[in-house]
Length: 138
Image 1 (cartoon, rainbow, N blue to C red):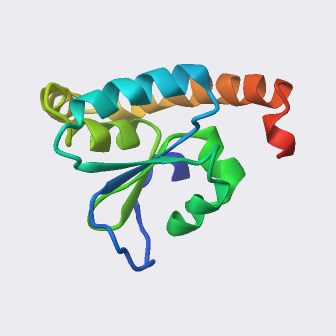
Image 2 (spheres, rainbow, N blue to C red; image 1 turned 90 degrees about the horizontal axis):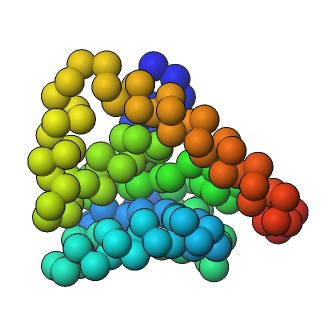
């Protein structure tokens, strides 16, 4: 298992026990996907944190802004940190209409690492595009 696929428990005190999603709100595609998830989160189970608009917020999870911008990061309600596909699974577990997908993806041996490999390639491509747009210099 690579570092990107690991779940790490952070030791920062939490004032809000909800799952926290750290996303790039400056990325139009990311904004559309997060907006879709936000519409489903009618009960407010998730904190949606735009790290493009508020870069200092990533201090909550102890990662650099650049690292957080390169892959989706989610801090679970117990303080565990997920990146990549495990982060999506953590989101799906909280949302009606997606809980079944979280169960299926995690039930099939080897599927999460395979999907995370594909996501990693996509995430690197997305970050290079964002850098071409001048975001990396921020």
